[in-house]
Structure formats: C-alpha cells, structure tokens
Length: 144
Ligand code: HEM
Image 1 (cartoon, rainbow, N blue to C red):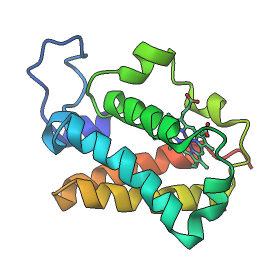
Image 2 (tube, rainbow, N blue to C red; image 1 turned 90 degrees about the vertical axis):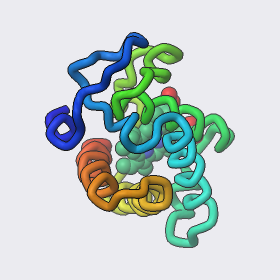
Image 3 (cartoon, rainbow, N blue to C red; image 1 turned 180 degrees about the horizontal axis):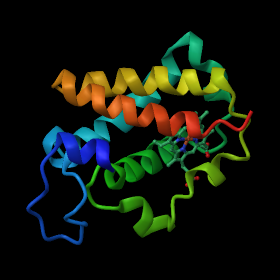
C-alpha cells in the first residue's frame, strides 16, 4: 500500500509479516489500538441516532462483527493477518454483496470509523492518512 509506505517506515519484525508492507500497525500503537478502534466503531454505531439504519442491517451479534473488524484491520494496517488466518481471503467486496450499500450506508459507516480512529490514534497526521485510505475502501464497498 503506497500511501502507507510513504508515511511510515518499514518494520523490523520477524513474525511472518511481509517486511515490504508498512508498519502503520506498530506506529499507531499495535494490537491495543486496533482493538480500541473496532470496539469504539461499534459503540458509535449503537449510540448515534444517525447510524441506526446501518446498525439494523447487521445480522450477527455485534461482538462477532467487532471481532472480525479487529482481525481485518490488524492485517490491513501491516500487523498480524488475523482475519486471513481465521477466515481466508477477506474478499471484502464480495462479503458485502448481501447488504444494500448506498452512499448513505457508506457515510454512516464512515461517521463511526472516523470517530473511532480520531479517538484511538493520537497523531492527527496518522489519523488523516488512515481515514483517507479507509474512505476509499468504504466507497469501494458500495453496490448501489
Ligand atoms: C461502506 C460501508 C459498509 C457497510 C454498510 C458495511 C456493513 C457490513 C455489514 C452489515 C456486515 C455484516 C455484519 C454481520 O454479519 O452482522 C459487514 C461485515 C464486515 N465488514 Fe463491513 N461494511 C462497510 C464497509 C466496510 C469496510 C470499509 C471494511 C474494512 C475496513 C469492512 C469490514 C468488514 C468485515 C471484516 C466484515 C466481516 C466479514 C465476514 O467475515 O463476514 N466493512 N459489514
């Protein structure tokens, strides 16, 4: 991911990660911070009046969805690829086709994610670059 490589230096780790990938994961604070983002994301969704339509299309217990989001973000940010190890290829767009995702759903998703990132990540420049990349990913999830 070029946008991450530009901002962050390469990791000095030997735990199976691809050393050519960014170490955004380490720089923003590793596992605890990723867990906090996933948890806060679903807290936001459950408490904001403007994101109730998004909450309503969830079918699994929220704890399960939170766990999967945490696992995905870990690998996506250059940390341990937990989602891949447990569930295989993320193929995120395909996994979202059962849900009607239009601009409004995307925006609700991003409201929660933006808040969670801003709460969990300290440096504004890190918040910014990750929000930018995840916004592109979220827009790619639209199927309507
Ligand atoms: C843009 C709007 C998006 C909407 C409306 C949306 C909605 C959903 C819904 C309803 C589920 C199913 C949860 C359940 O089973 O109850 C889901 C699963 C998931 N979403 Fe999203 N999502 C969006 C974007 C994203 C993005 C950008 C990511 C990655 C950063 C993501 C990561 C995931 C993951 C990892 C799962 C679990 C997939 C699985 O293994 O079943 N989603 N999403």
